Image (cartoon, rainbow, N blue to C red; front, side, top):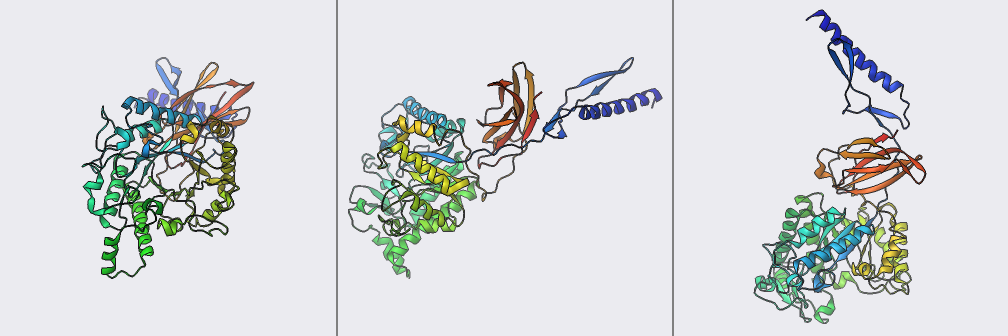
Length: 532
């Protein structure tokens, strides 16, 4: 090699190293620098008549002490059965249906909710494209008739919810085959498609027999189909297992055929225990099958708020254990759910169903440390000042549940039709946005650390960020520090830049940091930069 050229190469390396070293030593940084960025802005230095050497500057990434981000589950049920919430009528145009959905989702986002529980299968029918069950009467006014122009309501709700940073939980009724408000039973109804497993109750409803293996297989296939094809965050069952006794006017559930088959096969359980065993095995099966298909999809159940009268002491009322054959305590004890939302629809001062006593009892049974987020009767809790009552229930829940607080509001009508309720929540417990609590028992691949870019743009710091495998990101948390005090902002997945004011309320921007959050609430490591 030419000696002159060799000297120039050695000199270039020495200068580059010296320039980087001097830059670090001469630049006092608080917070503390921990590493050098890998995306340099290239400068040049003239060493000889025709040689230009690239010298990368040391753009520093700093170590900071970021504040924790508030976490709380804040959901609302959207019921499609009997057109309770959405769509408001069964003869709306597609555009009207979409407009109603957007209005509800915007309301939830603007009032700092973070989840919606959408009823996509009210009674063995579908508010989504299905090869297993017919289009819902509550969507189009006729069982089996598709919307026109055709679209997929569930897919629409998922996409629009995620755009707003809201989780979408698909709510299904496992055993109801036809609702009395569901129009006439026609040839496309599952009552006629699966007549051997369907029974008619005295109030006109039809119910799948929970003991029949065909019922269990069919509902299992429906759940797996939804989990496989849709980008949902959770599957949700409510409190309907074996039906309430009033549905059959006090008469016993008509399952003589499956009971006789069980006894003939040598079964030894009592009839009540046999019924509970049918439901228990089904709940465990659904939990395992959901996670086998997509491990990150959660499974939640919202049972009746009382397990049995006397639990805890002084509680009176219906027994889901004896009437619905739902041993909800067992499911919680075994951890066959990811979140549990007992319907605590009574006021705080209720004599026989005290809100605080019941929530405390359910917490004592949560030995697997699953999420416990009570259902609140936001529509019609019996209290003189309903907004104040719900606010107080949220505060009690936070005190009992501590770092894993949350609640689900029955139903979204209690919010959309009551401005006072919204104002009380938005100006009180829901004043700030919150991330969903983490779900540590579900394994998740750690997110990579985001890359952060900051450019001076006069009165703003032009800030953007990126990450590999962005599809694993559900939200971002942006941290900004003014006069040494950190502020946080939760942003949707598609927000990848922001112009941040360098001066605000007489304070100066000192630093910026970013974290990614996955769909289970897990945060990545942060990247932070000092603002000069």
